[in-house]
View 1: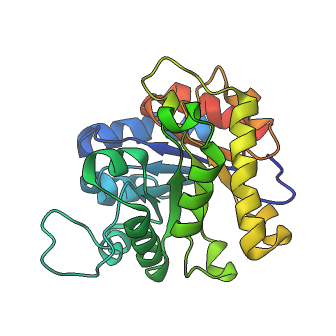
View 2 (view 1 turned 180 degrees about the horizontal axis):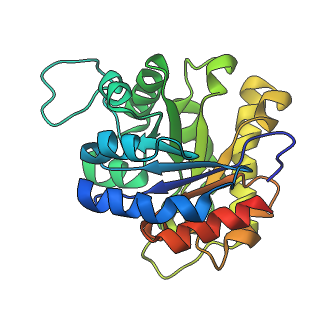
Length: 256
């Protein structure tokens, strides 16, 4: 990471965990552990049902609130979906867009990810855009092509000014539940590829200012090594974000 050029962001993705009562408890445990840790942005991306209560609970702290998905329409017959405007009114500031689980289980495509990203920006949200390759794609040696294509399509129609509100998270899907682990060098390499795509589209100065997170099982034990890499500007944290001590330890690593 390079704080002179861009913001460090540690974001927790709670996934489908914790009802409002449990969410409040976790926030209460976390707040004293991260008090005064002001060298990185701290975000918790919570289930839709938790957004209002968590937004209320984090008042007066350095914790920001995000959601895990957003629909691309403002309203309509889209049962079970949530619009960007609804998220804003509920208290969300951030939203995850294009997570690998949304692509895998719920049919999201590069094109609909672009629509969701655009809708989030239109409503004033700060999107965390996820990109990453599958195991088969990694083994075939087409990581750069896949991640570059995902990034380019997702950012279609997004100008440099609005890009300032976008965070990109690299998810090595091949390292999730496969027993294989991405090294810090591999993480830095692909984050660098993403930065190169942005440089080609917007120029090097703009690319150097974009926060690119690593989203492949960052934990207290590997956070410092990953965050020491030039192109890794934070983490999108899964399981470790559900344990206050572990999440705080990763934030501590981001302070150095």
